[in-house]
Image (cartoon, rainbow, N blue to C red; front, side):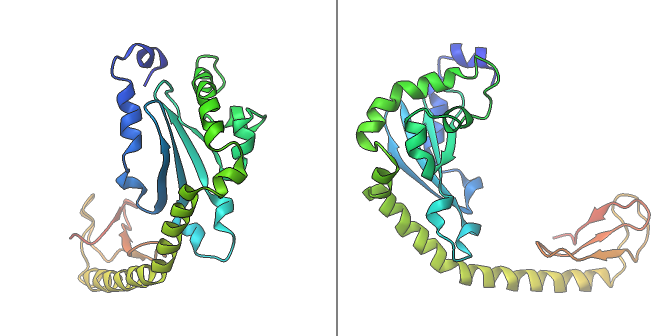
Amino acid sequence: MHRGCFRTWPERASLFVAWQSPDPAHGDWVIALVHCTSTIGVKLYLHEDLLRDERRWIDDVVVEVAHAAALQQAQFDLKEWSAWMGCEEPVWPRSIRARERAEDREDLVAFAGALPALRERWPDTAAVLQSPELEAFAVEVRRRAAGLPERDAAARRWRAEENARVHAWARGVPPCPSCATPGPHQLVHDDDGPLYLTCTSCNGWFCRPD
């Protein structure tokens, strides 16, 4: 949204309300809304992929702060909470994506106005780490991590079954749906998903139809 339109939009607070709701597109993230008032909210984010090794996951938690009067959200690492609360360089200006124009930095002014109340709740990083909200987030992280092996195994089984179906389909020498060139076409192996074919004529790719 254009900054000028946002300033005059009578329902701009609806963006803040929508931000508070879960986003289905973030299904592979552990997300918790740990603080919310009528004007400001704080979320914690941690991607599931960061739970597959033995490193300290707490070091990878991302904080997102939204304000009803701000077009952008602020994002920074949880370990930088103290620096962000102190408006310190480089964390404070870097926390918003668009910051080159003075009008974009208006969002930082909105965040600064909410800092006194946030400082009363969590004055520094240590206060966040010791909070019941962080403990509840950690419980969900541990639950999600415990279920990853079973989910990963199910995903591998599905991929193997789907690839077997693609192999059987490819043996039928299907024509390219884009240029109608008859097969056989090149079978492409993709570790991140099912197999697909690349046309030997137009180089387009196509999957087995469902």
